[in-house]
Length: 297
Image (cartoon, rainbow, N blue to C red):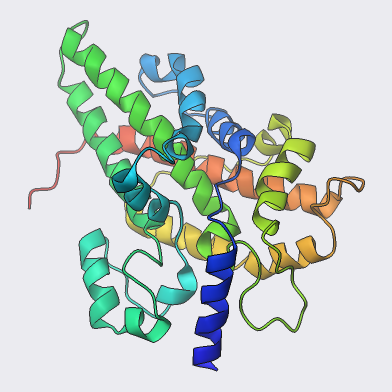
């Protein structure tokens, strides 16, 4: 059975092209929704930069096709195929994780390479820590100085791009080997076509979801301290919704040629709102955490 599973997964990956994330509208909605309900203790320049924060939401997908080196490094940052690593104690260090994939036999057992499982929680943690560091530099820069202006530009760029990866983590398709059609044994007859990813995150979002659908579902702000643990826990939650997503897709919930499904709309808006809430939390937490001295290693 293990060999059969490996063949099924390989064939599915070979046939289905790499899927993009949420679609352009979904990423804009997520970053824009994150600006709603922001606590009022952030620096003024951050609030003034909301339009740029929204525009930057789609940047990591704009980078695709830039060249061989970036095309190798960028895609794995958009997902974590959690089924590959669910039995591992995942370290916060990306490179220790890569070493663990080999030493644990995960690569050989599943017939994958060291980027196949993806790096999404590491990317979120790395950028969150970078954002915290940038805010800390801002605190020690002179008001009105060119240095402070440069740091503000860096903060907005990091915060906006970070939103892309946080939104990806809210999409169950980005947390599973079933990322674009069901590849495991399929007694429930879940969709196996290579349209399921796009059908949910792009066509249905463009057809049925507005900003108000997302902002009305935002959670209350929560301070975050351990960015990696937060991202990993969030991804586990998204992965737990994979079968529900496929069941709804099987039953036509994301078919744009039918009347809008209330269940499909609620599920999609909930996931976008979950990502937006987490992003808002990380932006705020990075600012608050930047008041603390950096950890010395």
